[in-house]
Length: 89
Image (cartoon, rainbow, N blue to C red; front, side):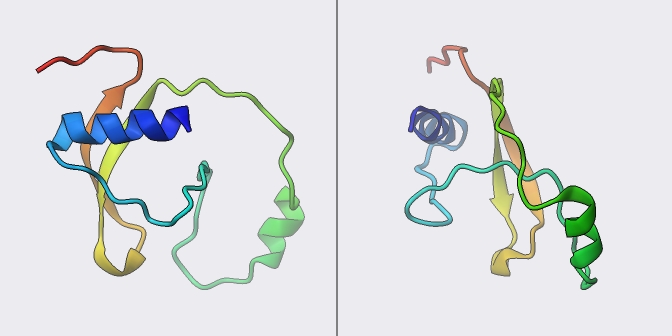
Protein backbone atom coordinates (compact mmCIF):
# COMPACT_ATOMS: atom_id res chain seq x y z
CA UNK A 1 0.00 0.00 0.00
CA UNK A 2 2.87 2.48 0.56
CA UNK A 3 3.95 1.99 -3.07
CA UNK A 4 0.39 2.62 -4.29
CA UNK A 5 0.14 5.77 -2.15
CA UNK A 6 3.48 7.01 -3.53
CA UNK A 7 2.36 6.27 -7.10
CA UNK A 8 -0.87 8.17 -6.60
CA UNK A 9 1.00 11.17 -5.23
CA UNK A 10 3.56 10.99 -8.05
CA UNK A 11 0.71 10.90 -10.58
CA UNK A 12 -0.84 14.01 -9.06
CA UNK A 13 2.53 15.78 -9.00
CA UNK A 14 3.49 14.70 -12.51
CA UNK A 15 0.18 15.29 -14.28
CA UNK A 16 -1.96 17.45 -11.99
CA UNK A 17 -4.64 14.75 -12.11
CA UNK A 18 -5.63 11.62 -10.25
CA UNK A 19 -4.69 8.41 -12.02
CA UNK A 20 -6.89 5.43 -12.72
CA UNK A 21 -6.16 1.87 -11.63
CA UNK A 22 -6.26 -0.85 -14.25
CA UNK A 23 -7.95 -3.23 -11.80
CA UNK A 24 -9.46 -3.19 -8.34
CA UNK A 25 -8.03 -4.26 -6.02
CA UNK A 26 -4.57 -3.11 -7.00
CA UNK A 27 -2.26 -6.08 -7.47
CA UNK A 28 1.41 -5.07 -7.48
CA UNK A 29 3.52 -6.92 -10.02
CA UNK A 30 6.71 -6.69 -12.00
CA UNK A 31 6.79 -7.61 -15.66
CA UNK A 32 10.04 -9.28 -16.58
CA UNK A 33 9.16 -9.88 -20.21
CA UNK A 34 6.18 -10.29 -22.49
CA UNK A 35 5.50 -11.51 -25.95
CA UNK A 36 3.35 -9.78 -28.49
CA UNK A 37 2.86 -12.63 -30.94
CA UNK A 38 0.92 -15.88 -30.81
CA UNK A 39 3.36 -18.74 -30.17
CA UNK A 40 3.18 -21.83 -27.95
CA UNK A 41 3.89 -20.99 -24.29
CA UNK A 42 5.18 -24.48 -23.43
CA UNK A 43 8.84 -23.96 -24.34
CA UNK A 44 9.08 -20.74 -22.30
CA UNK A 45 7.33 -22.34 -19.31
CA UNK A 46 9.61 -25.39 -19.57
CA UNK A 47 12.70 -23.15 -19.64
CA UNK A 48 11.65 -20.72 -16.90
CA UNK A 49 9.42 -22.82 -14.66
CA UNK A 50 6.18 -21.78 -13.02
CA UNK A 51 7.49 -20.07 -9.88
CA UNK A 52 10.12 -17.51 -8.98
CA UNK A 53 12.08 -17.51 -5.74
CA UNK A 54 11.09 -14.79 -3.26
CA UNK A 55 13.23 -11.65 -3.45
CA UNK A 56 13.28 -8.26 -1.81
CA UNK A 57 13.66 -5.24 -4.05
CA UNK A 58 14.26 -1.55 -3.58
CA UNK A 59 12.10 0.64 -5.78
CA UNK A 60 13.91 3.85 -6.67
CA UNK A 61 11.38 5.41 -9.03
CA UNK A 62 8.02 5.01 -10.70
CA UNK A 63 7.27 5.48 -14.39
CA UNK A 64 4.07 7.32 -15.17
CA UNK A 65 2.72 6.06 -18.49
CA UNK A 66 -0.15 6.59 -20.87
CA UNK A 67 -1.35 3.22 -22.14
CA UNK A 68 -2.82 2.64 -25.58
CA UNK A 69 -6.53 1.85 -25.92
CA UNK A 70 -7.63 -1.77 -25.91
CA UNK A 71 -4.69 -2.90 -23.75
CA UNK A 72 -2.35 -3.47 -26.67
CA UNK A 73 0.62 -3.28 -24.30
CA UNK A 74 2.03 -0.17 -25.81
CA UNK A 75 2.62 2.88 -23.73
CA UNK A 76 4.22 6.29 -23.73
CA UNK A 77 6.33 7.61 -20.88
CA UNK A 78 4.89 10.75 -19.28
CA UNK A 79 7.36 11.13 -16.41
CA UNK A 80 9.88 9.20 -14.32
CA UNK A 81 9.43 10.15 -10.67
CA UNK A 82 12.11 9.16 -8.13
CA UNK A 83 10.97 8.05 -4.69
CA UNK A 84 12.38 9.80 -1.66
CA UNK A 85 12.63 13.20 -3.34
CA UNK A 86 10.39 15.94 -2.00
CA UNK A 87 8.67 17.76 -4.83
CA UNK A 88 7.02 20.99 -3.76
CA UNK A 89 5.12 23.28 -6.10
